[in-house]
Amino acid sequence: MNPLFVLVIQCTFSIVVFFLLGKWYLEPKMGIYSKYKILQILFLINVFRYLPLSLYMPGQVAENFPEKVKEIVAHGDFLAAIVALITLLLIKNKSRFTTLFINVFCIISCVDMVLALVFAMYAKVYLLPLGVNYFTIALYVPLLIIAQYYIFKILTLKNK
Image (cartoon, rainbow, N blue to C red; front, side, top):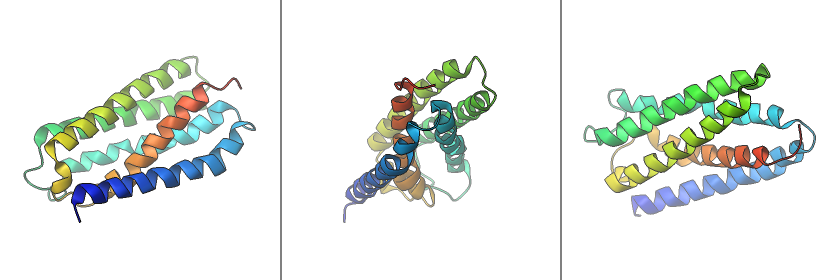
């Protein structure tokens, strides 16, 4: 079977599963808890975006993995992880900078995901050995997409 087709099937399936989890378990809580309580969960998910730094570990991906893609993915996600952690701490401490950092995070996160996807697809990294990083792509990235969707959704809510 074509590797790109397998990846698309797995990512699509993951997105559907995470969307259903959000619909069934997160959305019902949106009317009960403050948006900041729910945002804490969504930002906690994003804190683990330091994981793509493993692209720089020996033997984790093919030797011919494109350096530019490695830089975009690893550094973009690491920046998103740092901002997510700062934002999470600001939310927990009810800082006046919380909204600013949520918006900064959303910009960084979306730009990172688009750039990583475009560069990775252009370089056809799905044809290269990715090691455990394949599961990051097939499982964690779809979770991040759904988490980002819910962050946007929560930001449009009128509750406290």
